[in-house]
Amino acid sequence: MASTRGEFSSRFGFIMAAAGSAVGLGNIWGFPTQAASNGGAAFLLVYLVLAFSLAYPALMAELIIGRHAHANAVSALRLISPGALTRRIGMSTGIIGFIVASLILSFYGIVAGWMIAYFLASLAELLGLDGAAGWLTTFGLPRNVLFMLVFMVLTVGIISEGVREGIERWSSRLMPILLVTLLLLVAYVLTLDGATDGLKVYLLPDFERVLSPKLIISALGAAFFSLSLGVGTMLIYGSYVSDRENLPALGGMVTLVDISIAVLAGFLVLPAMYVALNNGVEIFNASGALISEDTLIFTVLPALFDTMGTAGVVVSLTFFFLMSIAALTSSISMLEVPVAYTIEEHGVSRKTAVVIIGALIAGVSTLILLNFGELFGFVIALTTRYSQPLLGFMFCIYAGWIWHRDSLLQELRKGYPEVERGLFWKIWPAYVRVVCPVIILAIFAQSIWG
Ligand code: PFF
Image (tube, rainbow, N blue to C red; front, side, top):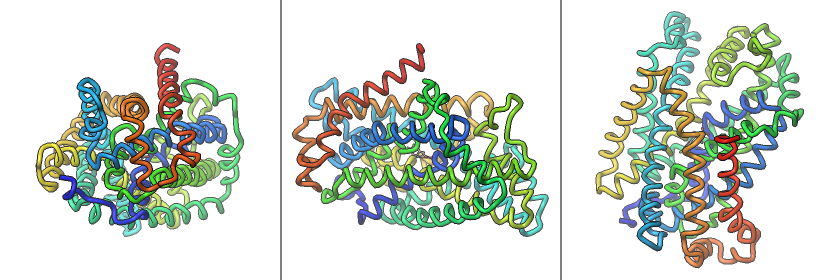
């Protein structure tokens, strides 16, 4: 089986793919808006600490297990388990992981569909098709279903091409475009009146807001979501990495790219909000707090673009193009999780697996859209707030306690022969065994009983 599996062709290919998975709506939308309403630079600080001390070790747990097994999460956790019970729990963890990955894709596809609709709306506006633009930006079932489907077809199309021709090729093309587009937008927005007020909110820390447990649990959820952890995405990408590569270095690069893009997106979104305020757009709610995250992208920013004339339409087009690309390089990684499992465990061809699973997920998205009020927020909270950190906890337990340490060390030595002398090996084992599990549980206990 292993010989027919795909493999990334180069280090660059892997970094683009894994960073493509990590960099998504979470970075460009989630992170800046959370920072805005939670103490600016203080949130940034908490986020950075959590990302390096908890998310990076958990990322490494997934990458190492994946590369060792060169298989999906279910087989991989089975492989490293010494006994019947640990094997069974490991396999269940893998199965829950691919269900959660599919559920994340089911809501992510809806939001990504909106991004495409808004992108097309700007295009329609440029062409003078105001009626079409109006329809594209109005919340309605036909529009929502249609663009969720368009996005799912793109995702399915890429994943059906496989690891190198699909995931790697498209991530390596789209990620540089994403970076350039983001830089251009940041450079432009920073020249506008009001931008410096946004920078102040972003960069001046308000520590009073930061130590609240609620904030810390959302920062933890955000860090896990941002690095695509817990659901087996990074494990499956790790399984396509060659044995010659130094995994701790690769994981470090991916974490750095992910965090840098989130921080960079903060230089776009927060200044843009204050430029909007400067142009008369309301960005505070009745109680004086910053407007909520979900309304920001689809109300404040479009309202801002509207105040800017033709330049605004071009900026809007660029912005929603950026969001669509960011979403696509992430969604392919979510779909790869159930697809790889189905190919490897049930001997189905890639094309068949992709089409069937893609259709099932689109079905779930439609169900969510039909019961939007009840299901949308529920699925997001269930998957990102609770499931991802808890599954991440399980991966840490398997890497730290269940898997035989000699075998783990041997795996790391493959691309990094002197690993025992490096800093990584001095710190990481203690983190993955004790620090990560304890902190994840403590934050959870606090959120439930606190
Ligand atoms: N990391 C992505 C983001 O920040 O938008 C979201 C994500 C991708 C979550 C892949 C989970 C996943 F498996």
